[in-house]
Length: 535
Image (cartoon, rainbow, N blue to C red; front, side, top):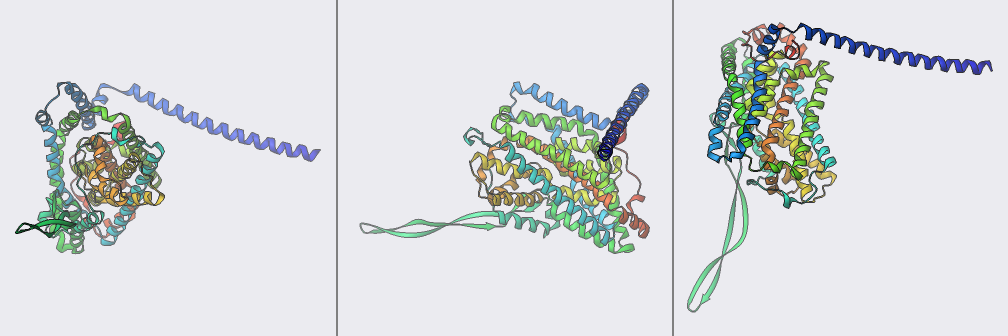
């Protein structure tokens, strides 16, 4: 009996200890909430007219850009009842076109100068380690994005129904999968660097018809009538307008490494490209003041170009919602979680410093055009080492397309669903691999995902002409996936910097002349992430 009571007392003591531990945890949480509430109340009471003015001055760019986006949407819906002609819409969106042209004007010299100075300031072993970390990050996040897209489209199943109810827009050029991947490798090694500044290699197909003669006798006359025998598709060399960013990135990285290996003899070239990069960033500081105006007219013009906003509803509306949810999961859950796991820092403070770049990506729909602003926000607001940004950002803007990979995998399975095609496990794996590889070849230009999606559809035998079913909403989804791409590149720069702290410090000690941190700091442009959320 005494043994039983002793056992019962042990269990009672254990239960009491558990309750006490739980109560103490609840009490600690309650105290933390009270402390935060008290600090917030104290900050609210300490707000003065001067502190409010200081807050608005520090965050003027972000606030102006947010207001510009809202004004653009309101302006577009106010003008839609007037049914403007295509020419009138082009006149209306002209200020936005000017912003795109100004930003794209700076992209080419910025990519070349930043990569050359970034690679020249690093030891070859250090740059190799950093490059490996960046590539691993790009591959991991892209594969995760692809599987999120596949999971979302299989769970929600937005393609149920008939494709006859969907509206088709535009025309898609046929592309062979093997030709597309070979073009990707060809563009890495441009034969003419000057031509690479405005053209890319692109294989064209030529259909040749082989005829044979057939003799037909009528009276005394014998006539030879050509009869088609078969068709032969012949690939021929061609080109497409646009900067060959991949080729310039490969050349700039190799050229920068060679300058770095030349030590003192390469110092003149290193200083030249460093000065060029600084001059480009000062131009960005001037152009950025025009960004809110340009973004407002860009968004308003795109909404006015829509023939019928009703296409956003129904079956295509479910597809749009599926893409949006997938992008939000990747951008707001997966990427911040990876950043927190690796760096043990608050990802939301880091993202707050990127707001100007993210809103610009939303407005311009081009990760390359957003690149100058992304540089400024990362270096000024988040304090990322300039050697990291100059190496990681140009490469990321060229090959790291998380949003595009997610979108291509999801859209391919959606097209299979509207055609009532049952995809087996092997075909889904093929889509995931092809979407990952195709996203690398998607240049950072508007709607490049539509072109590379032809590769994904061809890999599993889906009809490529059905891409026209989703063109109606691509202008909107392209902006969201571009924003996701820019966020992924920026968080990747923060992760690579954290993992490369030791190598960067060692480079500062061994090669003090190579350090970019001794350069004159650029003019402050974007908001401070800490000041953005506190007065």
